[in-house]
Image 1 (cartoon, rainbow, N blue to C red):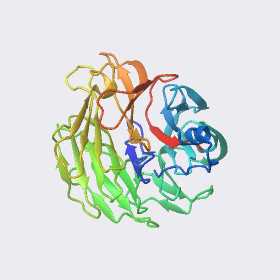
Image 2 (tube, rainbow, N blue to C red; image 1 turned 180 degrees about the vertical axis):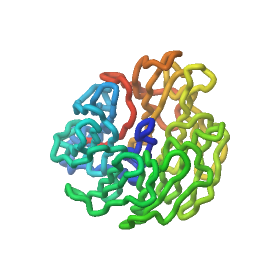
Image 3 (cartoon, one colour; image 1 turned 90 degrees about the vertical axis):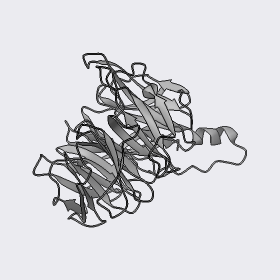
Image 4 (cartoon, rainbow, N blue to C red; image 1 turned 45 degrees about the horizontal axis):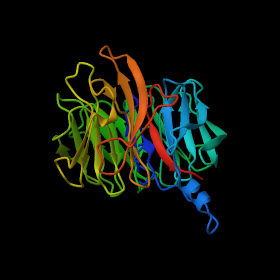
Length: 366
């Protein structure tokens, strides 16, 4: 599945290794296929299993690939105005460039490096997502004229164009069953079945200024909301439009993701005023109280920090991007913190070439 962040603040719908593809999301991704390694070739096996971190950074104008062992950049992909990023289970990277009006497609050419293989015209991309079959979905067009175009694997011509049900769409996600989810800011989520061009479900109950969404492997939808005076995360069972509402431990949610065990992670952002502090809360499946809290979420400046997406690797490590700000809201620094499962202290911090890291994804070396 993929998770998605509302691209009004930026998408986050990314593919996360360890999950089936849903936003960007998610949550969104399947395990990247492991290459065949000769018997006894331990060094090659270790290299093949190394996760690589992909970071979309609008502030720096690039997508950077990092070794999660050294924290160093292995590849920089220049992007004039990155609007969205997704990575499928083959390790193919999709990057939307709002200035050039294309979604660029990159294939892996080895551990931690890629090359561009094609481009798809998208004059006004707002968000992108890939599903578990590596079909690409592009949300594009101005408000009132939006559409979602579906592109089968390797194709530059859409097989489906959705226009009905889109009002002011800002983010996409897909699930393991092939359904598409689109956020209509500020008050609904619409759901499309595979092949459909009209929504079969419109969700309005509990939706109030949604900022992120993700779908777990069972098809449960989670939406982070910042409206109505209090932040909430609303959970919708497959086919349902009335939610269970999560409030305890939630203040200003900005990103949500589900790991391979079905645990829900919620990232709250911090205001420069200090009235709200940055943190990550973790909930077991079905729980209404957090079983783990990461104070500050790894931010050095927890009173002014934004986390726009979350990702996991196969070992269950959590990756958390930060955009830290001063009391006036200006940027201080960008970084990604890495947490081992169950830990509240980071095991690694990645900072090289980062300004405003937004969407992230983790894939295995090819």
